[in-house]
Amino acid sequence: MSKEKIIVLRFSAMGDVAMVASVLKEFSEQNPSAEIIMVSREAFKPFFDGIPNLVFHAIQPKNIHKGIYGLYGLYQELKRYKPTAIADLHDNLRSRVISTFFRLAGIKIKRIDKGRAEKKALTRSANKIFKPLRQTVERYADVFRELDFNIKLNHQLKKFPQEIPAKAEKLSQDKEIKKLGISPFAQHIYKIYPLEKMEEVISLLSSLGYKLFIFGGGKTEQLTAEKWAKAYANTNNIIGNFNLNEELAIISNLDLMLSMDSAGMHMASLVGVPVISVWGPTHPYAGFLGYGQSENDCIQIDNHARPNSIYGNKPCLCGVESCMDLIKPETIVNKIKEKLNG
Image (cartoon, rainbow, N blue to C red):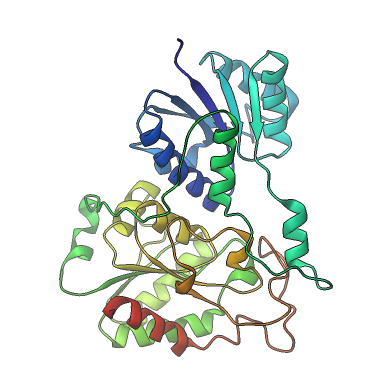
């Protein structure tokens, strides 16, 4: 019998790709004879390092894999692996085009069911159906089950601290001090806890003696993080100073992460670190809670208007004050203290 080779397609976004990595870790452990070819953006390769029987193949959609001809070129590259099945965990235009090429070549294809109708019912204003939906990681696993593989997700965090990068060794000193990561930014502004209130959180946590590490973002976010690092004791900016591999290693040595509904949560999940997460127009019921994380560690307000968005790209509809503004900094700090001391 020939060895099963599955091409897995998931190109973005960062948090979604990190969730795929959590699932593939479990899949690889439970199906050691299967080979995986993971197709995603080059930047996300570190998420998949160390997963047995996995080869990472980068898609470059802005140049060599751009347009229909570029996607056909990618298909030709992937065809050389001689796959036996395609797991489309993205279901966007690009992934559909690539998987269609394989279908025409007689290769078995299965796609994720994103549950779009259920998500619309969860976020609409009138006749909202407020109930937990299937978790995204289970939707990913369902694709492999439809391809006749056995996979049972245990939804448990597995912490394996990695070696701290040499240039970050001083950050790991004082082993008795609790180390807390903070990922205060997100792709969509409506998922971000107001920065002036986040600064209050950082000030309070710093005064409690925790060692703080700020993650996630580009140049603008880096400037904000550097300002906080200068203003508050034991506060360190990670943004712009370490690559993704190094960031994951640093996160793996933390005691706890504070994050928005964003990639920071999913990166912490990937290395087995518990997360206190803050939710605004989005909601854990949509299925995007970090793998192995607890809903009890989610901070959010109860309001009939929530959730009104799946991805956080729509403003809050809670009234004069947004659902994020209604969360007090002390609420977040008290939850962190409870988690770290409990």
